Image 1 (cartoon, one colour):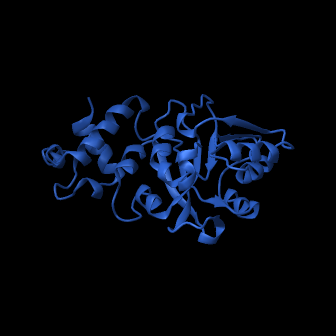
Image 2: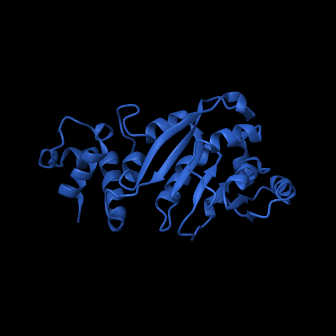
Image 3: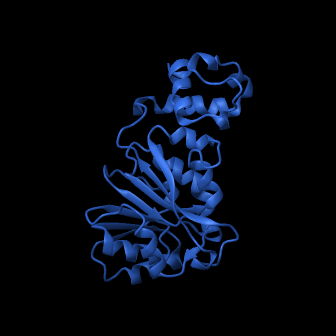
Length: 243
């Protein structure tokens, strides 16, 4: 995490809170887990007792100094001095558990869900409003990002947090969000770029979307993009968007 991001981050107060949250994940003893924007290592220290290997990523000098001191006794924790937005992970099997700056949430979700080597699961502490837009059906509408990642990832809210769990306390409600790689993909990964571009165009160009013969895909012409379900997006793409 760079210095510019620190103002958007709210740190968890205690390992007890982290342990409770990790208990709501599917992180297991043989897993490799990345803690992005690790700060002083509160999350990494809990993960170290739960997972086989922990990679703590941090770049802010003061936090990095504390992180190295706090992780000195953990043989299974590796520290990487790097900006999380520029991090490249080539492991073919890993998970993420992180309390990232709120202003980077969309960028981080896009970065790793669009990666050639995506995580098996991501557990991110995010604003409740963001999570509700990503979880299909939670508000009876689908966000652009939710529609774009849906064929390959499922999303659900695992646990709400209290403002007092953080320092400084955030002004907004927060939750632990799970984004999990589907065991059976709904669309071949080779079509991902075309699918994402089709979805983006439907959301951003009203004339393009209204010009589609949605009835041919058994999609109601009365619906706007945010009202389409994942199944409807897949039918629409298969009928009218696939090249």
